Image (cartoon, one colour):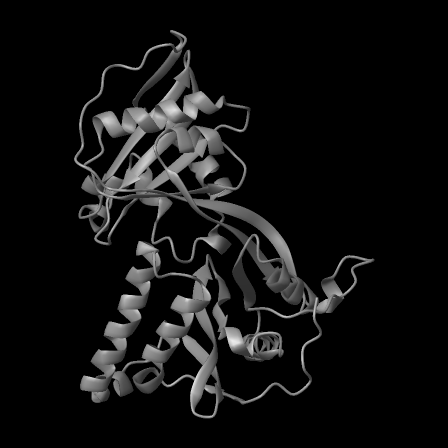
Length: 339
């Protein structure tokens, strides 16, 4: 790993959304290779629309308190680096997500990403009790090395799958499965096991961007009038072996470009083809043909998910910051440069 320069060219300053968001969107698009990524383009378009709105109505942006903070690295009037700080809550605990750490290609290996991340940590640590998390591509070992050198530790890895939209069509009944394998509507008695599996698979610390409340998945959610608008957008299919619950797939309709799927499986081993069947039955009985997103821990049921027509979009590592006094014994700091 190349040693970062002690004095990177340029200066760090706070993001000005009215004049910086377009340049930041362009930088993030190139740095993360998002030109062919529909989900990435959706987020980038939101950034660009927000920039245009703030330029047209600056008095509104001055009145509104931003939900996110950001900093850019500027050299010669050109934005060559960016970092975003996104606050959210996991229960009662405040969390700061470090996101969009991007550096222009010709400025990499100069320590700009390291300087931006150090500054983000200083800002986040000013708030008592705030935890700091980030997400990084699993294959980007250079960036992971830098984050480890700054005190971040690996928490878990997830795979994000996509299925393109198409005109839904029924298929012939699936054959070749044992007679004891059944897929049908979720039963009320299965909710406690599904809820526990959902919380274990999608921890609240890593759920900041998923826009989901698992409490609304429960059979008693109808008792809360606040849920009535969204409940028709939720459907549940359970997989059983004999009378034993093995897993539940939940479809969540959204107003964005794709709907979400949530997979909750029992702890004991389930065969890949059973996960594939659960997904295929969903597409036969429920799917409306809109694009689908599915996120699941990396390396689990990969073949079953892919065989149901999904494509792997990316693998991501979750990391959280541990102050040096909390590092395990024997941990050595590394040096390097991030993108």
